[in-house]
Length: 349
Image (cartoon, rainbow, N blue to C red; front, side):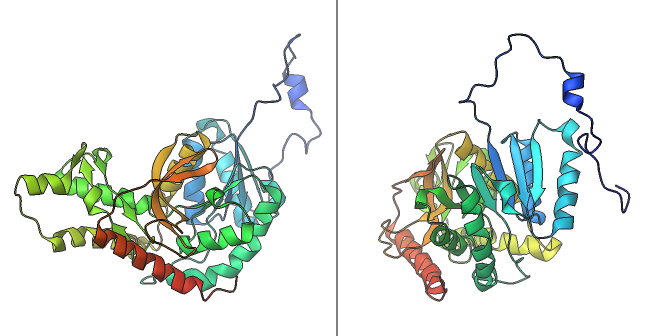
């Protein structure tokens, strides 16, 4: 668009194009009152927010997409840029505004707004910079979409999911963090690379914190239904623990590497969030490692959100899978929960 010029709609021109262009068919029935469109709101139109929005559009996951951000000019520019792709996308109404009224009636509200992770910065160190921001976002989202599912993407995601839960007053099943859904995808990819197989044939989970204290569930990894460690032991194929730890460390460090190379991550988390949205809206009852209220699981006694393999559907988290953990994995998970709780105790919430 040329600088200084504003786009105009048919309404601005005073022309009722729809009634002129289309002739009603006699006897046509109005839309059934039970027919329900879906609406998704993305809060924050930075690199991550727009990657989430773009992926949702291309995967035909909603009939209306609302964008919310405090930067009105960037917000309008992003909205127009997506609207101008209408001929190449499924029919989706795209709206935007700095006022949260634009988000009203959303089925899912995805929060991506937050301070960007700096090079070499731990996700946990972001919490103080993002807490005040959430205090301005979550109450407004809840006011306009009281039945929505909150999907938190902003880092540190586990702590901010806890913050969103406390601020929203929602039941915990309707407040979800993307957690280690992406970490687990990276994990599957790296294992598949080592074994030279398709990543879709690998089932492997990272649980706990989305960050430095995450836990790799080596005991439950399978390829094509075959438990990997059990197979290696049965075939007397030697492996060393440090080799396994190196793969896990590569998963943890991969985000930092991307940030160092290009300044931020966006595409992988965009696909991860859209993957969760699909399972939620289409009630697919799929198992995802997402950040959920973990109190009462695996000996965790504090109110912390961290990732556990969980069954999710149209009303959010349906259950956490009763996964078998080794004694070592259980201890590591509890330490991860403690690391998160230690930070939460310092929050003014």
